[in-house]
Length: 362
Image 1 (cartoon, rainbow, N blue to C red):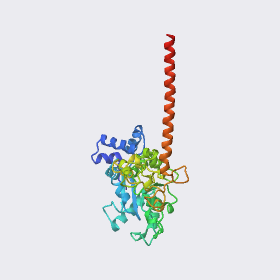
Image 2: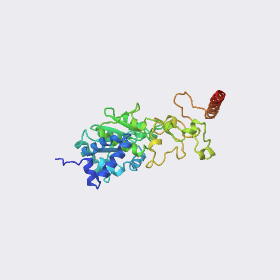
Image 3: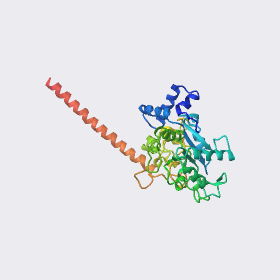
Image 4: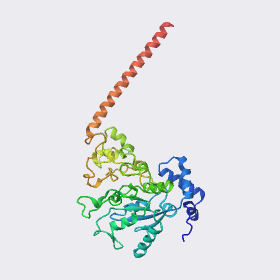
């Protein structure tokens, strides 16, 4: 007979949270999900009434970077997610148990929580001869875990698209999760790895609303993948002005000029890097001086050299010519200044004529 499970709120209180701490956590979660301050009540209500979500976390061909990113979440903190919001029932990286003990525990969870647990997958799935877990091939393990899952979340570009393991010539015949799981809702959270708060934000949405978040045409949550990095980039003004770094150590790079000439894929990459940033909102690659490599997009690993200019500006058929951007914009700027000066002169002349007329009448 099952014992009564605590709600997320009750679990938080049992671990020393005050009511104030709990509401602060809910506010942070609402912000992470892109909700307004008014929606904090919805999050708090869900946390007060919903039980912790059982989670099975499988890992196949990966570098464990997604797990590493997840445990560095700051809004909310990883321990809040792991101990209060979800019940992490299985994880090769984070579980204390191992071997036959943990495999038996997972089998028990799959039966006891059928239809209730969320399946998280990290890493691409290879042919059976390259990866076995507990004596079972990777595909068999995935199919068994997905069979009674409520939904599936793919963390990272390996699980979402195939990733580095699937790079040409793909010796292990790796495939993304969606090539195998066809009958369950799948939320793709690509990135190499994804931002920690994006990962926790997806979990928070599922807990709050009990459903998958709104997805884009690629299957990614719109809340975190609705804008191109180019649209929110802190170097965008330099791009518009035609000011580009020519090398990683030239004066332009030191002045923070646009990195498009150095291969930046920001114009074709959808991610919330500029808004949410990494390491608790500290920075992101472009801000730190490294061009975006487009790691949230399909096949980024096979789309040519990372530091060569290849990204196409949406709305065009070819890459732009940065050398002409500055000339064109300069011409537009000069024309604008000239027009403004002409209008100013006309207005000034009218005022002078009006003043002279008034003096004559007096």
